[in-house]
Length: 127
Image (cartoon, rainbow, N blue to C red; front, side):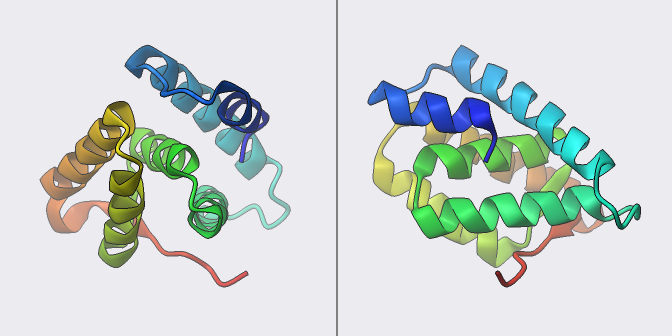
């Protein structure tokens, strides 16, 4: 994940506020864009690949904070994971019972549904 999210999630031990999550999401989006710009393949799918990698890692670690951060970052970029992956993320975050993270996932799901069939989706690549 991003340096900002790792250091913050590990050092807190408490629930993030909405304001803090928005800050982390904006920082994460900037990092994702920079990483995609440095992608050697130089095609239009660099951001999707980066999001896929980040979400796969977040799901493997089962970190509700990381999952919510990646989902929020993807939504800011108007990209959403495939439906089954979004369901898995939702279940993992709901188990954490952190109101801000649950609300963030709800907002991402809502935005995804509003986009209908025309929303851009990405899958999780195999490691």
